[in-house]
Image (tube, rainbow over all chains, first blue to last red; front, side, top):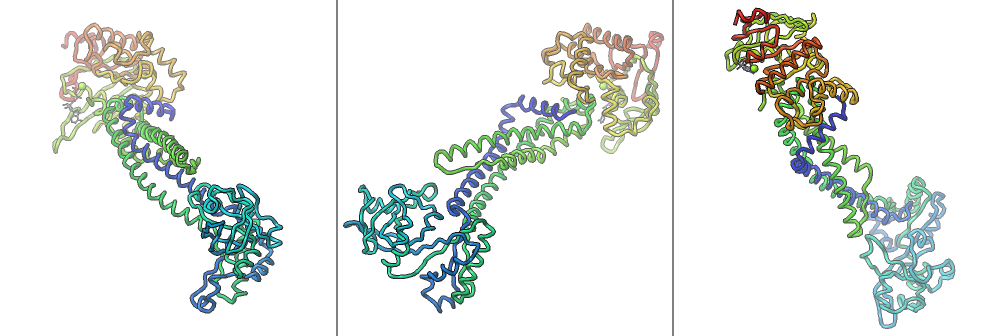
Length: 397
Length: 232
Ligand SMILES: Nc1ncnc2c1ncn2[C@@H]1O[C@H](COP(=O)(O)OP(=O)(O)O)[C@@H](O)[C@H]1O
Ligand SMILES: [Mg+2]
């Protein structure tokens, strides 16, 4: 007896009791759809977070986290961990393709009578490329600004709003730490997850920053390499070099942005796991429902089973018939669950603008899993059916 | 074709064994038309089930075409049921959700016959029992006699050597019973199929050419139909 015949039998007996079948499937539908929904949300969110944090990729930051002794020995280093000499040394590492530096401080920015506290960053030119700093109006800082130590500033959209309210910011003179700067550009509003963080930022060329603040500190160094392997190598060498220069044990370290992304990914995975458990429970309950209805169905069809046996069905064929029926039931439930879960996920994503990914593997896993539940919870009823005594089954009223 | 020797069947009820068949010796030749009669509870159905491999005796030997079949495995017996035997029941036992044609196709599905051939042969069988115009009807759209015809078509569709009918007319009126018995007679005469019919009714039994009388698990009479008048 072919599998096709069995599937036909399964469909016909499922369709005879439509209501009952649908009620039976509800557990499976809820279980599978919640798995699909949550995983779609989780994967979408993780990807989005990663792309936001890692940016254009292949970058690592160098960080300074000294031991207690090192801290006592050199308390200033915490505030200004890197020097210009450091950068010159790091530049000699062949694996590094780009070095991004920034010097950050909080200070006052004033336009006419309006004074706002803002972060003031002195950056080098590669900072703009690597961090994808794009202006929505005006222009970006140009090589000439960096070379000449010009008084040009690019401000964040958040600061622009607070400082100028409805006025046009471009070309206006603002006072950064009491020094006059011309606003040449306003940055794009951050999108997506970071949209709600409207922060106040001013970016000026690093040389100019040094002049107005009167110090040489460099707050952060990020290096970029052509590919991941080179990047790892470069990061290691840079940290080693810095520790050597500063006579520290391992105060200088590599902070891989991707690690942070992974960390966030882990949080999402934990969430996924918890909700996965909930889904698991509903699948278990659904599976037991399937088992129950299969037992009912087999009792109702005792005579049919006896007849089939009399007509030459082997016990194996009877077992297979009811196993296929249970699997068909859970597969239909699983398919509905996948469609429903994906539908809800797309709906939610279009309403709250959260990215989702319904990946093929998760759909396949959903299908396989519902089939698996059919087998697990179908085996007992099917076994019962196949072990019926044909004579008693034929006599059954 | 069939040779039963010292067939016993007992059921254990509580701690007591109830003997239902008490040593049956029976030889059935190809092409015979046999009726089995006897009081209720005498073991007729039990004997039929044993002959049809639905049940195994507690003791005894069973030769089918010279082969000792009782040692066969379950799935081998299922195959014999499928190919060599056609069952007809008192309650018809048609699958209620399948139409006449599909019901008749069932044994061929288990025999692994391809769909096209299945349909052709099922149609043929239904035409043979006079139901060529009711093939797509569901069982509950058919009369008792028609249902039993479908069941007979189903029993013969795999061209069995033996038809076992346990009270096939038990649920039918006299006129319909006659038609059904005529059908069995035709299958026996024209196709040479061996037929065994269990019945309570003299009328029905008279269609056969051999009569076996069971009582308390014994064969008390086994006679040719010609001599019947004298014995009963
Ligand atoms: N599964 C069983 N367990 C115990 N006793 C049974 C069983 N099946 C049949 N019997 C007994 O065997 C006897 C013969 O039954 P059966 O062959 O059906 O008789 P008949 O068909 O001649 O009326 C009856 O007394 C019945 O109660
Ligand atoms: Mg009986």
